Image 1 (spheres, one colour):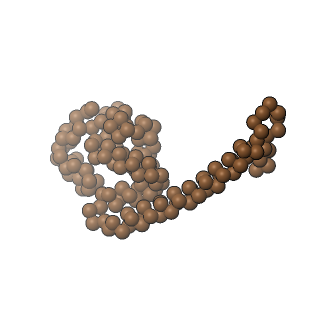
Image 2: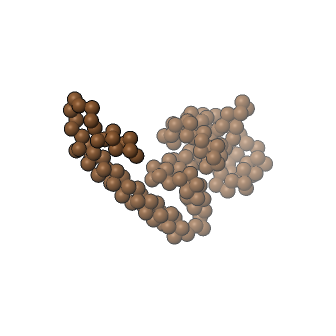
Image 3: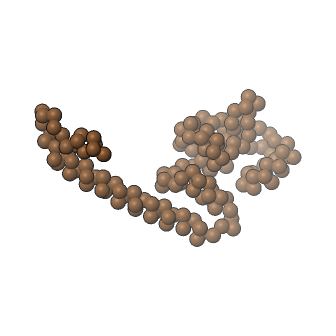
Length: 158
């Protein structure tokens, strides 16, 4: 954990440009490892989310390392939760926009959730078809010492 005291001008610029950033003159910053641990994400994932613009490190250390604050960690946790429902990176970007907008309409968020539910239902139907086909092939396979196997034959024909 690194403490950085920002001058008033820098704090005002950050508050104006970020809207959601604290306008406090002193904030606590965490290196990427500690931010990853606090958000329960791998360091590589935190770095990726920063690279694709889902979360922007609050600052950089003198050595150029990314530093994250509590708001960044909250965003990382939010993204982690949204990704657990298999929302895409672009969907997460949009959801973050809704989350950070006090004037949002819940209608838009619900539409995204319903669209995701439809996609999950479709994936479940596809997985059920795969399951049935694999069960059929496994049942047809004698599973003995002979080399003939309809499972491998099916894979070779696909």
